[in-house]
Amino acid sequence: MAQKTGTEDGNGTGGSPCPETIRRALAAHTTMTLAYTDEDGPQACAVLYATGAESTAAPAAVPGPVLYFVTAATTRHGRALAGPGARAAFTAQRDGQEWTGLTGLQGRGDCRILTGADRAAAWQVYLARFPFVAGSERLRDALERTSLWELRPDWLRLIDNGQGFGHKEEWSRG
Image (cartoon, one colour):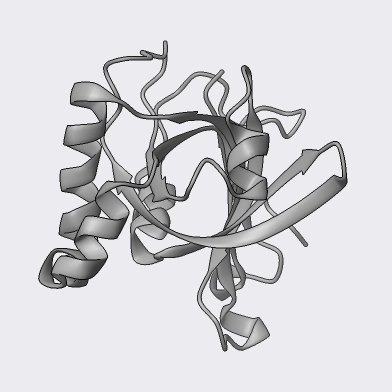
């Protein structure tokens, strides 16, 4: 049977800091499947992401994780996420897991392109997570010319079958 933490309606911890178990799970992965919708309907794509500290440009009442990813604003998902109030859903999990130990995350939140000091700080987080980017002048130059995005989750669910089939831990920004 699935276990839930948080409020009785299952919407998460409603305003409390994001649990360390969820933060560690986000940090343990590097690829998320980003889902969005546009005028052509729903779509999904895989992007590399890095986790970082709360951004100062868009402060939230409750601290929570922030995810950074690189993609061109001219891609289908870039165009869909560049609009005001853009939202996305995502999953992150390791490939090749046995069902008895399956762990992964589900989430949703707001997206925006970073600029200025926010971009510079997030870029350092991204390079620290993916040192191969800094190690390749060609790749680094290409990615530095590409948009760097922030996805600020307002809801996260950790699924950990290692703690029991269907075990869930949820968090929401409030």
